Amino acid sequence: MASTEFHALQEKMAAAPKPEPPANLQALRDRIEAMMDGLPTAEGVTVSPVDMDGVPGLMLVPEGGADAPVLLYFHGGGFRLASARAYRPYGSQLARACEARVLLVDYRLAPENRFPAAVDDAVTAYRWLRAQGQPAERIVIGGDSAGGGITAAALVALRDAGDALPAGGVCISPWVDLTNSNESFTTRVDADKLFSPTQAAEAAALYLGDGDPKQPLASPVFADLSGLPPLLVHVGDAEVLLDDSAALAAKARAAGVEVTHRVYPEMPHVWHLSYPAFPEAVEAVDEIAAFVRRVTGA
Image (cartoon, rainbow, N blue to C red; front, side, top):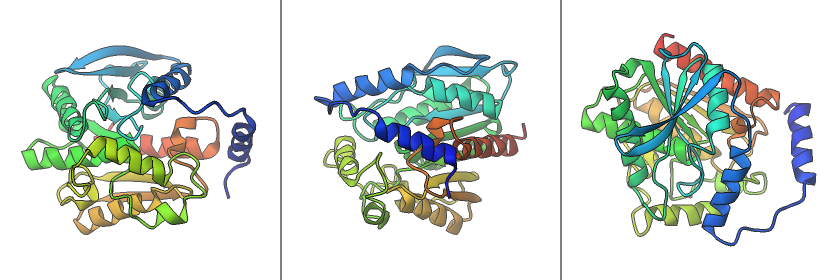
């Protein structure tokens, strides 16, 4: 059973006045930016803009962490929403908890830039980081929701290109099957208040256009996952993406990849963003921190 702190926050959110639906995609983007960017940066974390060979981002460095491992992070938002700036508060919390530098990537969004733009930007960002002298074994890549899918796709793309792979990958509530056909899209539809089948269908169409949703770099569950580094996969039991995570974990294990797959009871989509508001968010972020330290030898 979920904590009393989690239920109290859920009740508070449910009682809050509901805003008017946004008029269009840009209005929704603006609303999310204002909401997330209004949160504070974690104490002791410095934020600097970076240009990764044309891909913008933010480097977040905890106090004393100039030479710390790097968590290269791809934000969620269904490939069409959010930004590095919006994820700055959460990224700063990750930087402190993981005792790592967190590099938030502003990959190109759909529909202005369709697949494979986001994956291409992820690969560019990783190669830029390597070119700065960062050893692959001191890098972990990760992301949530669409960013979790980008994480898995980038690992496949880097492996296929012969790049030295990072020490690990973190996939939080990953969206890795853009056919949106897994059973949990039906069984969890009433429980998931944050990502519905309708939203998934709309976002996939914006990202893919007329493209095949089974392309391996669009839906990594259809890729060969052999040779990937250790993966940490988190998902909440109240998510329509519950089965996406299970499918990714199962296929990676079958390919010989070390996988830690955790299903958190009652948790909603990417509950980590609420850190440190309730114990389950703290536990999940602490588990990410332990994974980053373990695989990088920090």
